[in-house]
Image (cartoon, rainbow, N blue to C red; front, side):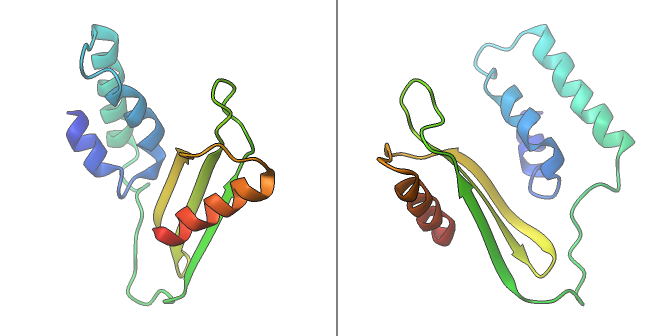
Length: 120
């Protein structure tokens, strides 16, 4: 069930966070995790038109936005990066992840974020 929900997140970013949270417990799932997954399916059934749509008459301009915090993780002081890619006015890609290096300044954290965003 989680695999099908993970596939669905490509057109339904509104469920990405909760699906990722449920996927963490797939090694040793409990009944509460099954209830959470069923709740996601009920949400999807009640919101069938909330997905992403890409009409053919949409503009073809590629835009990217990114941001990062500085040393946001309290244990290892790594920064978190978020980025979005748009084709015209339509979202085509997004990510949120912890940086692999410890930045020495906000400028370095932003530079790493830009490099990751452009690498997408």
